[in-house]
Length: 417
Image (tube, rainbow, N blue to C red; front, side):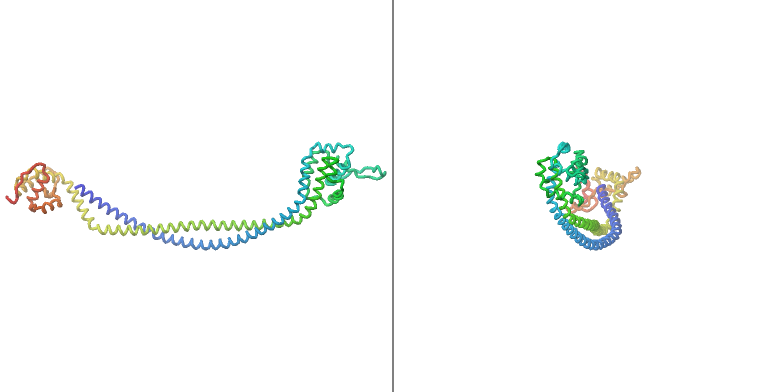
């Protein structure tokens, strides 16, 4: 009884759950359909915006390419000017570097040695004179010993006081001399010495090591000046080209920034578009799945709708049978134990008497309970009939008594009564 009741209750619960799922799926479909429509609208809007942004990117990209080409041309032109200027400067650079190297080799003691000379050689005097002219130090006026009443320019004493007083400062002034801005008057004043055979590094070297380096430095400054004059127009053109290049590079930077913003926006939009497409596909698949499940559920409910009523009635009957099980089993057990040797009429009288006893003792039982209703299995009973068991009530009771007893029963043959 419990097994049958359990199976039927499982079936009824499945039907109830299916009806609940149908209701849920119907609600989902009501929600899904507007979402699909809205997502489709969003996808179409994003596709339109993507088309617009792609057109904007094409325009911006073309502009960037033009700006980039212009910038490259300006950069190439500036490089040519710079290379040309550097080529001219390269003529003076070796002499300048050699002079600087010699200056680096000088020591404070070398300068002090020159300063301490009481009667300096002519090469030393000449070098200090040129150096005074370079640093625009005025000579000291002295009487000309050869021509009384006339004055001569003494650059040696002026150099001792104005240049050689502090060797470290003098060397630093030589190293940091502003070679790019030497006044023309200074260049003019020293030009006469540049062709003087006595004012060459080889000639001065015989007089002083320190003055040799100063001589090389002076000649290098003189040569660099004229090279710089030739380079100045090129430097001006280079400055102009670099300024133009800076403007173009700024424009290019702005164009690239604008292109990057549009590209980033397009990338973000395409990502959102792909996500919207995936969402739409997911919603469409979910809608299709809901429709299939809903169709299957409708078929299940439709096919088993009539059975549900019968199952519920059967469950109620089985619940009642379960409550009446004790009384029904008592009747069946008494029938098996005591009624095999009696006739059908006497059996019915005893069973009716037992039912009255159950009722008086308030033991629940089925109203017309007997062994046939309580213990018979329709499938097994049909098998017995197929194998020649008579269909009368006594024969069926005897078969049930034989099938359920533990001992050999004594039975009345209904056909031989």
